[in-house]
Image (cartoon, rainbow, N blue to C red; front, side):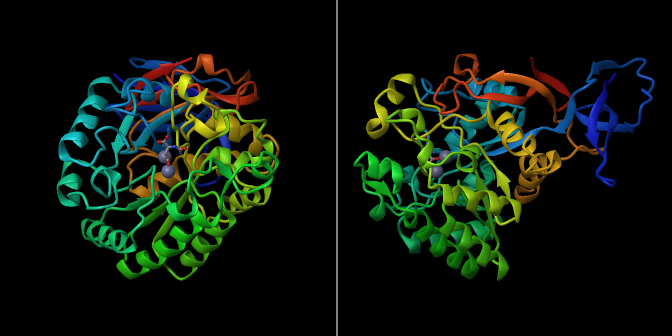
Length: 427
Ligand SMILES: NC(=O)N[C@@H](CC(=O)O)C(=O)O
Ligand SMILES: [Zn+2]
Ligand SMILES: [Zn+2]
C-alpha cells in the first residue's frame, strides 16, 4: 500500500507551468505523478488531500547547528529536526562546532546514531577540518569520510593559516569531498559584534569590516583553483565576497556559495538597539551589501539559500549585543520570510525560490532528493501559500527562540512535511 497526495499544486518540470498534480508514494519513493484535474484511482492506498496547497520537494538546508553533543540546552538533534520539519525541511546538514567537536569517527557516528534514533528528518554530518576547530592540525579526513562525513568545515571560525587550508583542500579533493568555509580573518575582527557601518557609528561600537570575510574568500578561491577542490563559501554577506566568487566562477574555479535569509532581508540599519537577537556571524551588513546578496542569488553567483540555524538559550541572548553569543534560529521562518518578501512582492518567481531551497543544494552536494520526480525519495513539503501568521518564537519547536523576526506578519507556511513517504510533521 502506498500513499497518494492528491489535488496539490505543482510545477511541471518540462513546461514550467503550475498545474494540479497527484503524487503516489510507495516504499519511500515517488512512484507516480499524474497531472491534471481528474484524480487518479486511489483505491487501496492512503490519501493525503492537498487541495489548495503547494506541493514542493522537501526543503534542504546545508547549514544548521543542532548543538549535539555537548550543548543540548541550546538544541538537540530531536528538537532541531522537529524545528526543521515544521519549517518544511526534509534534509539538513549539521555543523561540527559541538562539544566535543565533530572531528572524530566516534562523534560522527554519535551524530548519525542520534539522528537515526531521535531525528525525524535526514541529517547529514560535516566533520571539522582541524582538530577541535583550533586550526593547528588536520583531522583524519579519510576515516571521517568513511564514517559518513559529507564534507569538511571549521564553521564558527575561519581557518587562519593558508597552508593549513591548502593541505585540507588537497586531502578533501583526493576524497572527492567539499571544503565548506566560514570565512573570517581573526586579525581583522578582534571582538566586534556588529558590522562596520551606521549602527556601529551611532552606538560608538567597533565594527567587523567586510574585508575580514572577503580576504578569506579571495585566498581560498585561489587555493581552490590550485588544488581543484570543490570549495563552498558559508553565509556570504559582503559585496566584496560576491565580486570574488563571481570572478572565480568566470575563470572556472569549482566554487559554490550560500546566503542566509537574514542577509537578504536585513541590514545593520534595521537593528533596533542593543538586542542580542540581532547578533549573528557574519553580522548584518550595510544596505548596499544586502542588495549585492540579492543580485548574487539572482545571477547565480550564490547557488543556494541556507538558514545557518544557530540556537542559543534566552539567558545567553539576554546578555545584549556586546556579550551575547553570535547566531539566530532560522528553520521555522525561512520559507515564509522569503516567500512573503521576494515572491509576494513580485521580485522572484515561486519556482526560483523553491529551486534555491531544493534542487540547487541537492545538485551542488550530490544529494538524491531535491526534485519531484518518479524514483526520487518521497521527501515532500506541503505549503499553504495563503496562510498568514505572525512570527511567534514561543510556537517554535526549536529550543532556540533567538530571532530578529518576532511579530513579522508572513504568508506561506508549511503545513505537512513528508520524509521517505512518511508524514513526520503536520500542522
Ligand atoms: N552564525 C552564527 O552566528 N553562529 C554560529 C557559528 C557560525 O555559523 O559561524 C553558531 O554556531 O552559533
Ligand atoms: Zn559560520
Ligand atoms: Zn554556522
